[in-house]
Length: 286
Ligand SMILES: CC(C)=CCC/C(C)=C/CC/C(C)=C/COP(=O)(O)O
Image (cartoon, rainbow, N blue to C red; front, side, top):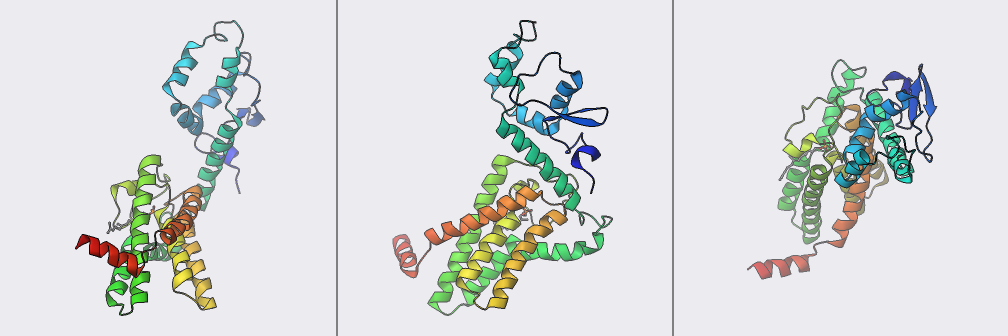
């Protein structure tokens, strides 16, 4: 498998701590200020890396202003402590940008069903079927139907809480997507059915949050037989995997989505609507 650094350094490969010279990558010091005598390619590479550039753009205006005015080193007075902090990204920052670079590279490698011409293009219809199985509309419609058809109080209670959980999931995912605004992978073809405008963003994967939430919910309240429990877990995993294979998401979108859906189930349990609570709420409304 080709290395992220070697194949496409301009886009997602390589880490901002690396500088390249004659095709060879060198590590830069994270703790010492970058010397003015450093080879220009090291400085240039820092600025041209898209991930680093994005992180720098998100710095506070004060800090950015500080970087243009602190000319201690640039005017030949030698690097000050402040320059040292400014020029050298913190360890966390470097770790984050490296993780993001690996994420982008890995997601691109795994997007093998992104279109019909992709290496696994023939599996795309199956992946799209899995996608539909984790879509919000079938889940909401199915739960509403079961709620309507259920003739036992226990069944209605479970279905009502699942419905509330699904709505809660939609709201939380919409908020996080609108705040983070991470673009979907470039190789994604936006041919999903019934999407909101916020669904042009990819973090977190809404299908993955739903798969984790519904998976946990089904295991806790509905599915008891062991083979079916395995099937539910397999389905949840496949929904997440299909997001990356279809090129809809990066790996971190799906991992975070699973974690978020898992936590959302805890929230559903905390806010559980019992028949008594429901009667109280309806009584207050009447
Ligand atoms: C009642 C109501 C507001 C239903 C909306 C259901 C709906 C359109 C959900 C969107 C599902 C969707 C396409 C999410 C995107 O999933 P990702 O995994 O691509 O983030």
